Image (cartoon, rainbow, N blue to C red; front, side):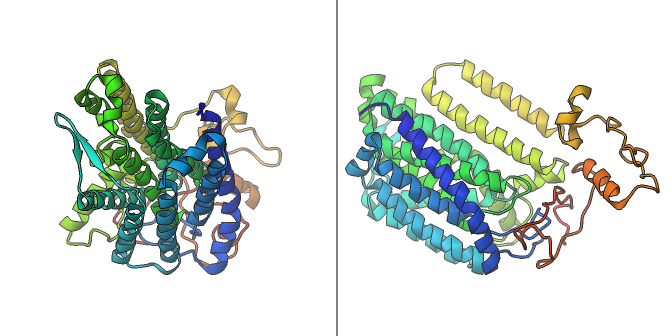
Length: 466
């Protein structure tokens, strides 16, 4: 079997293209069926926005699997393993539960039961953890019940971690895309570097997951035209968990003894991303940390762990003064640092320079967290090519019909209403406060298929109500 890089790239591109093309019609369908709830107190968007983006993502998943099944270098994944079929079965079930929740708001315990059933469906078809590599001990075989319980626990944790972090435009899709990219590099190294064909399904799952996220993100970036909803967040969480289970429970560390010298050495070399109990903390550390903090916070306040609130990490970033886009980029940064840092350490665990790089990048991230009000300014010669928020103050060209006005000053009385609106738009995200728009009003981004999108996020405090 040759190097299937081009086949993976083709599968990723087809998945992304199908997801991207389906998202537009799905958005109109969501508006038509009313899958566009009113703005809640914990939401940060200002306009009613349709959900059900998971429908397009599921279409991309199916397209990616179909294309991969017809590619020469990837046919063996379907011929030698039942894992792709197990993934599709579990994904279809969790996707259906998510679609119903996006439309009818299913109870949290019912969703939890559906997640466990979807995990059990994958276990029945062979996608389960068979053994664990324990440092200092070696490979420990698991009984059927132990493997089933551990598999179900990993699926539920990963799904809810991704679901909890889905609170800002483009946040969940971007973080999962970063995690799947790091996971793809690790799984591909096991397959091509060590010749372990059992890692091929996980590599395929990671490539398809990247395509699903990349195809949906153009519609979901701030200001979002559509949300993925639970049908999308639970789906990508399950696909990410399926890849982790496949590469953890199906790849035998004994196969790496020829490269590492001993089973114990192989176990240590694969430790950073190989133990499933540690995997959610390395590949999706930010969503997992948010999940744990949310459960502790809600339990401490006497609430249900599944009760929604505005205390997530992304809400805190907005509260301390970061803009919507900057908060998302900061979360991207930390996800990439932890995911790729873990993968890099797994490749060169004996190299100390990796630790220093991670420490340096963490210091840069902390500096970014402490500068929420900093807005970079472009050079004067670049003012014509950058958005208004990044231009130097007072650098706007003087209009012909009326005297120019600088930021923060009232426009001249002779200015027209259109000029006043243009001046307000140029003030950026930090200067304008808009009231929420009711569902059904003409021109609302979610209520109609046309109309301008608001660029001004909510800046209310976490404890405030709307």
